Image 1 (tube, rainbow over the protein chains, first blue to last red):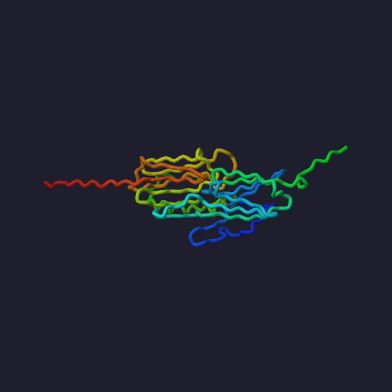
Image 2: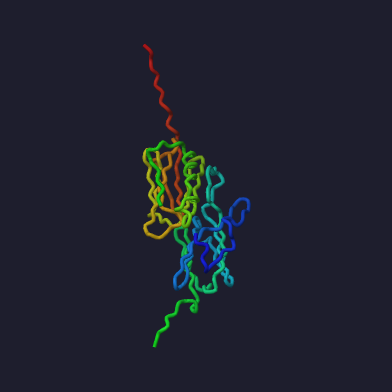
Length: 130
Length: 134
């Protein structure tokens, strides 16, 4: 994933943030693409419905918390479970050029897409020559 | 990148097949290095059925095709656009054990997770024919 993008930094360096004994909380994979208007942040959140996703911003920190809804019944015996965390958490620091107040979010097929706009002053400005 | 498996190759039992699946080196191939993440794959068993769950973030229901041919379950996932997905298009074959009622397999896709229900049935008993010696 393109975690080295200059517009954001993550404070959860490893693949897994916390483990509470029964349910693993992992940092979800994400990808960043940039345009003149802002950045698009795609986050893989399989198993997460909209109701179990929380997004918040505090100053320049964007925090994502999400729980999977596809619980495993107690009477199921697990033979193989690979790469399946029970929850996701991601904290990213937005570059000053981005506006935390202008974020559009869309969740579809297990992928969250966030469109984060650049501040007006950070967008390219055409200067006319007289 | 597309991962395929020759359906004519001999296959072991379901667990051996999953073992083989998990050895597919997503984490180490060049294809995966920049854009791909390991696929989440789980196999559960209850008294009534087997459940296979696959995390397929970015794949719509229409992108996934499931077929069963001669006891082999094939999952084929192919994205309809040219955008890079979190996981690559793939085709995966899984040899089904004898106790699966192949005609009653069903699947459900929700929030980027594919769940395949494989109902159990009594495995066919081996037929024994006594040969008289004249």
